[in-house]
Length: 145
Ligand code: ADP
Ligand code: MG
Image (cartoon, rainbow, N blue to C red; front, side, top):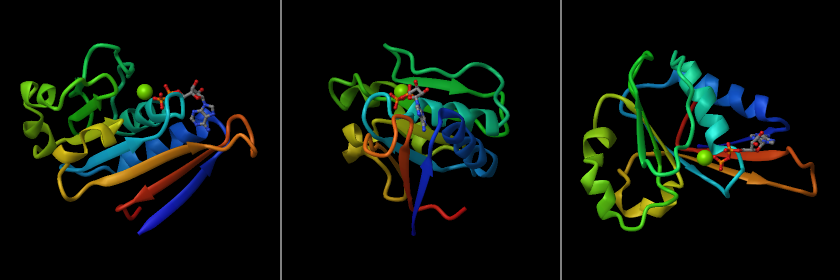
């Protein structure tokens, strides 16, 4: 099933993330794709809050994976934007996270497409400058909520 959600502010995208974080189940792998600055991290911040994570969530420049364990479920936040080679994923032992009991959120997941499990939730975010500067079209594939 494909679901399309339109947001018009960062707060709306944050709230969408929050809702999905509240509903999240262990084992989910959520792939976030879309250009730089589209709102993947804003979504992730809402998602983390929805899981009950209080500490600040960012996309660290030189870290592929950040782990947050204080919420209802462990959150494994990947940002693979700067990955040079998929072997870097092996080095961090990604399979333990993809196939573990927590939730994975992967910014720029398309860059590691060959490593993704068969069953993932795909979230694609797009701008449309003809609509508005803060408009985002968010397409969710593979998730019923
Ligand atoms: P990404 O992680 O995709 O590179 P970020 O989440 O870091 O992007 O940044 C998104 C930027 O776009 C933020 O500055 C945010 O305030 C802004 N923004 C404007 N409108 C929206 C919207 N509707 N949803 C999400 N972010 C938005
Ligand atoms: Mg980001």
